[in-house]
Length: 233
Image (cartoon, rainbow, N blue to C red; front, side, top):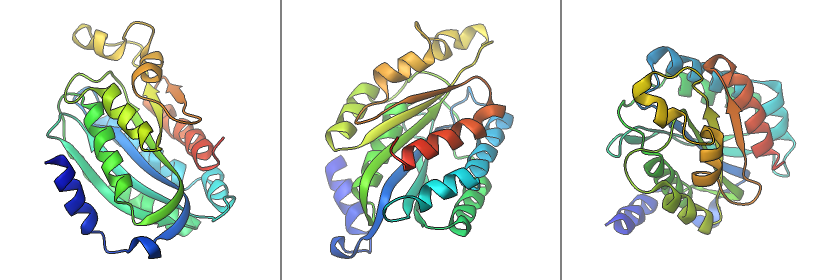
């Protein structure tokens, strides 16, 4: 059924493969909106994305590519039934394009709360990339979250399927240094969340994890991460 649904979704994309717009990278931002992230943290996360996409560093990285353009989509995930493509593909060539994408992302309402199904978020992002109406030199999934996967499909299986399709998955692990007891194992797995992301979430050529210890620093972290992803560092 999933293969049929993907085929129908791809057939609905209006651009013909031969006419696909070239870009340096097609990037899906996959963001955790599970119940461990409260509304103030969610707002900081959105503000961080906006600050990153409107930063001179990211604009310069886009302009410095061989094509000088990227395509971006935005996905939110919580439980397996709460996974959504919030913003479909948009091509960014200029600071004005980036500003419009950033404003749309910040204005989009929160889609869910619940458990944490990272594998479902990766699977949807993989499908979005398969149907992307662009010709991308690289395909990247950027997963951001504050805990381990505790619901839905196996996250490593979803990661492996994406990597087999030629996709690189990077991670941004938001560290909760003072978790309450009932979420401790979720946000502080053995070895730390960044290590868990390295072992279970990230993969593909040049994949990496960025660790950030508070939501206030999210904007700086995602700026650095986007520059590295766009410039393929």
